[in-house]
Image (tube, rainbow, N blue to C red; front, side):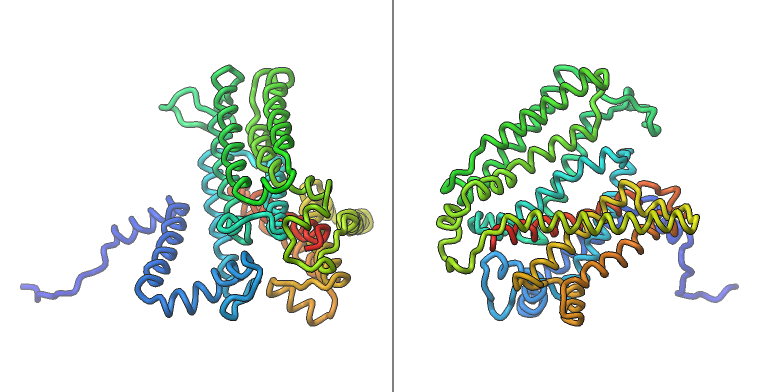
Amino acid sequence: MKARTDSKEPDKNQTGGLRAYVNANPGKVVLFALIAILGIFALGALILPDLVWDQFIWRYFWGPIAADAEDRTIGGINEGYNAVSTISYGLILAAAIFLIYRLIVILQINLDKWFFLAIIPFIMFGGLARALEDAKLFNSPVVYLFISPLIYILTGLIAVALMVIAHKLTFQCSSKDKPCEGKTCPVSRLDYKLIAYIAICFIVINLALAYIFLQSHWTNYRISLVYPAVISVAAYLSIVGYSRYISKGVIPMALVFGALGLVMLSYPLSGVIGWFESPQEWQQIFLASEAEDSVVFRPVVVLQVIGLSLAATAVWALAAFAIYKKTKWHQAALFFSGTNLALVFGQFTDAAATFIAIDYYSYWEKHVVPGFLIDVFDTAAVMFLLKVFALLFAIYLLDIGLREELKKHSQIIPLVKIAVLVLGLAPGTRDMLRLAMGV
């Protein structure tokens, strides 16, 4: 007779089942983990508001956002980033990249050079809209949508949603019972039904953005809705014309996605054009509370930033080409490929705008690591050195170091490159326009 025992061996089937589920559904696990963490903080803010909200969420996250939106110090909290928020936003970005990657794999979206081009209007939207917030275009509470990092989170969510819509419109299986297998799935062809669906998407986006922007000071200034209307019509006709006369009836997903991005971009672009047309009137309406000598319009800064970033990119390309020729290290050619040069230009745009703003116009850096380095070297020119090391590391890691390991997950490489482009071009565009507007 065996002695009775209350202890039990762990169920290997259950353990294996959990591990198998995690391996089979990594995207769901990451999503559930994010939701759980946010839920814990929300619950903690309700149960222990003094500890969770006042001492953590408000102090490190929402307080700086509110201070930026109201352009003042609130309860000792200033706008800008801190070590806690920087690390937290970095982790959120990493989780977001992974979730988007899983979505792209499921939908079988090809992140080729055309997709890379299609994402640029969304990147520019974030930078331009953020600059307009600096110029006091938006009222409260709409202004909170255009404070970083909220503007970039919102733009990212919209871009992902429109990517899915563009994919569903242009990439369909002929049979629901037969799963898609790579490029064997048929793409949608131009017909009146599909044209109508795309037109509805354009109309919905225009109505939503017009409503948001008309909640601002937009109506107090002669910023015309003609520009968004013209760009929307041109983008829509480009889809129909290209599909009918060039691609023989096939509608490219990247074309639809990029056209939707251009519609979004047209609204902040209209505001920027309005500023260039009559900056003095802009100052009287939006910046009336500012001292006249504190707002100096500098349109030449746009040329300075773009020129400096182009020059730095050219130096990078020439250096990489020289290494490629003299050392016969063929992989050096990767550092001046088209896609990677776009990353370099985007990051150098951020460096150039930061350098000119801080060294020549007495602005300050609100990010933790760049701010520390600028203080140590006593010049924002160190941003170029920082960007060089970051770009060397990123390009080498993605295109050389981990290329074999990521061969089965090839879509993660262009996705991370898009993230690198966003982190450079979006804030660089914002800083450049803020300098030009003098705000």
